Length: 424
Image (cartoon, rainbow, N blue to C red; front, side, top):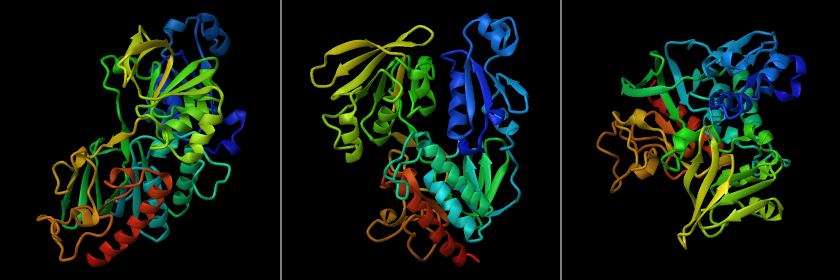
C-alpha cells in the first residue's frame, strides 16, 4: 500500500469511468481507504473518450478502466483483480498459527501490532479494505497523539505498516464463513475454499452499516445513495446539496468534511438534539459552520430517480408531515449491526442483535454457560468458547470509539498469551 506523502504523478493510479457508476465508486472507495494516490477521470461522451484514452466510442468500452503507473490497464476489474495487480493478495504462509485475527479495523490492527511484536505467529484477515469503518472517516480529531487530527485511512495505514514491520501476515480480501472449535484450535472455512487453523483467535469484525429499509434502496446504492462517510466522494460534491443521515460522530465528521466541498450539507437526525450521540467538539464545529444545517426529528421515507438518485422524501417524526427535496448525494451513517453469522453453529453465545458476549456477562448466578469447558471463568474479552476472543464494536457493551477499540485489541492479546500458556 502506498503512502500519499511519498506518491508522485508518475506513481498515480488512474481510474476512468462514467458518473454515477457503482463499480467506479467501489474502486474509488477501495483505493481511498487503502491510501492509494489515484486520479479520477470522468468520461461522459465520445470526445472525452478520444481525448483521454485515444479511443473513439465510449459505449464500446468496458468501464471502469484502471490504469496502473506502469501503463497496464484493467477493464471493468473486480476489487480482487486490482488488489492482485497491486501485489496485495497472497496465500497463507503457514498451515497453523498461534493467533488468527479477523477484521482489520482499529481493534484488529491494534491486536496485530501487539501480537506480532510479542512473537506470536499471527495472521490478520480482512475481507475488504484495511481500517474497517474507521478507515472511511475523513478526520479523527479526538484520538490521542494527533492534535491536528488524522484521517481514518492514514491511521489504519500507519498501523498496518507497524504490524508488518513486526512480521504480521495480512490476508486481504479474505472472509471466514464458518467456524469450528476442536482440539484447542479454531478451524475456519474461508469463502475462497481454503481453511484457516489457529490455536486462538480474536474476532474484531466490527459492524455493518444499517440500511434505511426503503423499497428502492438497492436500486440507488452507489448511484447517489452511499453507506458510511463516503470520503472518496466528497470532491465530486461541488455545488451540490448533500444530505447525511445520522447523529453520531461518523455522521458529524462526514458533514464537516462534505462542507468543505458542497454548497450545502443537511444532517437528518432522528432525535431532538445532537448532544445524546455526538461529541461536544463536533457539535461546536457543526454549529459554527455556515453551510451545515441540522433537521431534528427527521427521517428519509422515500427515494426517487430513474437511473440515479434525484430526490428524497423527508418525514418529520413529530408532525408526520413530509417534504420532497432534490439531491444527488445521500450518505447513511446510522450505526450498524455485527456480522457474526459465522458463529451460529458454534457454542459462541451472541445477544439478540448478534453481538458477541464476553467475560463476566456470560455468567449466570456466578456460573459460566454449560458449554464452557475450563475450570476458570472466561477472561474479560473471552467469548463462551475458550481461546476465542472479541474486541471492538463486534463485542456487546463495547464503547464505539477508535481509542476504545485500540485498547481492547491490545488487551485481547494479553489474554491470548494467558490462554496459550494454559494449553501448552
